[in-house]
Amino acid sequence: MRAEQISIFLENKAGRLAEVTATLRDANVNIRALSLADTTDFGILRLIVNDNEKAEKALKQEGFTVGKTDVIAVEVDDNPGGLNQVLDPLTREGVNVEYMYAFANPHGKNAIMIFRFDNIDKAIEILSRNSINVIKGNDVYSL
Image (cartoon, rainbow, N blue to C red; front, top):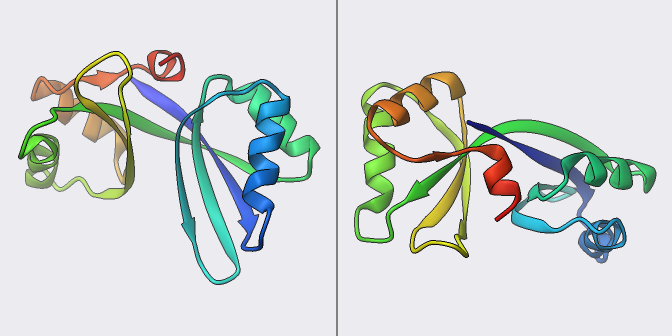
């Protein structure tokens, strides 16, 4: 049920993001979803890609600091309240969302949200118990 996300620490200066995407392009790695958060001096680029091992190897060879994090991908109904259908049962049981980002599902009508929770195992159990579709990592990488 878990998906693996790559996190890259970037200096906050012109061209660094393009260096990452060029490295992935040259390694023939396709980005499926991304989020970029910044502070004054650096940013954290979070990526879901089609080939984590190839991406990590290529980025490290170019001198980037790369980490891996387990996240989960959840299908969210595309209607008012769709996100609350996911968040409400987690809130009732005290699971905290550390961060999230979304991307469109090219093969379906609903969005896919990538979540990082403070207790990922408990989150998966709660979502499954509430019949919320948690997408397998390999399925997310191949969208």
